[in-house]
Length: 238
Image (tube, rainbow, N blue to C red; front, side, top):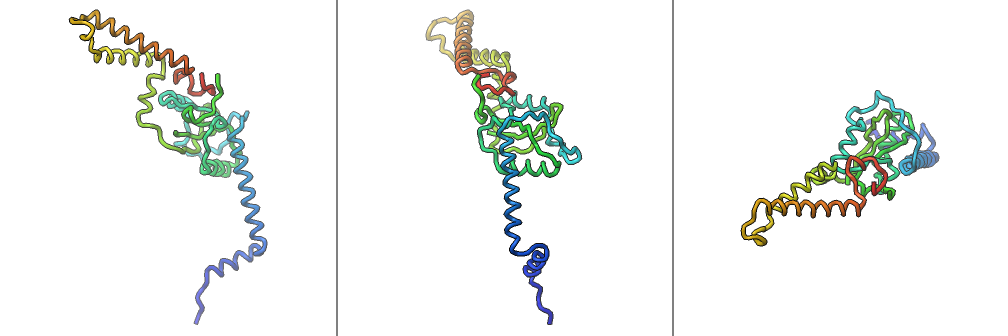
């Protein structure tokens, strides 16, 4: 009768032929140590300023759907009032999964990646005083390679809510329509027994000046600016 094959025992025999059992722990410890060193190097690179303008990729191994031009990034940031800045400005925690993807890219392309960029709301960035991050690596010629996305998605109404802040024209239109609505719902008959068109026009002008003044005061007091001016600014009050 033939005895059954113990595959665990066979596997152990194959391993022991490759390396002595007493040396296995040393080998594994060295591998993990090298891995930790490389991961820590990536984390430090993400936190510091770097003069490298672009990274060297193997174009045969790139995924086309991850490549974005600066014009696409700018439009997204302007529409949703986001910032596109160096990763060193990010004050949140970059997940380990993102570090793993960077390591995977470095191994696949036989390179050391630098010059990382992040798209995120201003509140997630450490901005100098003058919910959905995307991590990129610069490719050169205004192209960027998306490495990883994490966190929660943006509020579905964020684009609409940020529309007034895109340009000064958008802001004036917003103030105009809000003034119209407030004029329409104001009970003017409490102030006049027979309101005329001229009185409604005066009320509208008052509303427009009142709301416009509040917007200007808030904007100057908080140092706010329009989306088109701040999307790639590192200054909080730009």
